[in-house]
Image (cartoon, rainbow, N blue to C red):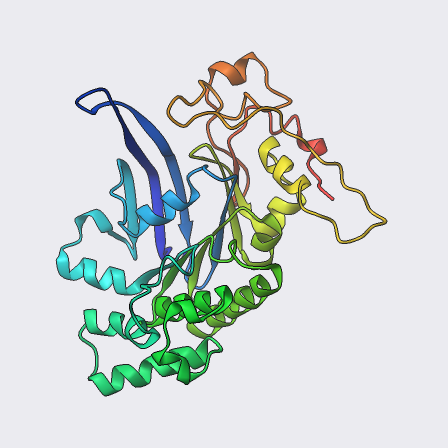
Length: 331
């Protein structure tokens, strides 16, 4: 078995909640709780779930934009927490991110040329003329014209700005790119163009992707494997085809039932979840999903389910996934 490019083990990330006159720490937002997964070279892991479930925090913690509270992150077999300055600089060259908002993530005061040349400047690559030429090549690669180099981000549409963000992310020829809701702020027609661009670049560069999104139809299209998150925890992960055909966790079933079926003659059974997502400051005891699960019993309210192996590569954290298996097919 080949070694994974990235391995995440037992990752936790808590953010402090402060209050009172002296702003003392009075609690924690348990944004990420015991998350584990791996990403293979050239493959895509889709990380899905409702807004606020911790998906983006996972992606940003992998890049050390947040310091993990606990757990381990291994890149090419090396613990990133143990990296020295030179190793961390090389890691940042290999692992990049595309942010959700293509306007906020680009410096409005900088030209496109300066934005795209900055990675080369930081890593001390090339002369000024070479960096300018490389920036133009990057624009061509993402479907924009070289004459855009001297323009500013506000002069572009949302889709064009996201292409610039993608160009910046691939500038240093990374091995892994975290796509943090990279298409959710775009119109549907533009989404498909950006997704196709990402998939083309993945094939050309043998890129591994962590594709963070809440649109399961999009995730199905781009992912090799999928991990479903709820309230900071992964409740199910499997091969993309497996998880769409045979979901085991009730939450996964509910998410999949919300995907529109592009055929008016077919009707899928929509599963409506009751209640709201609990607060990550005070998550429920037992299974975190039990407050909204239609199958919850006393055991679910008191005992946290452990991750179980359904079959090779398919894991689920549910006490009764086997009993519910006869209702797993969706659409």
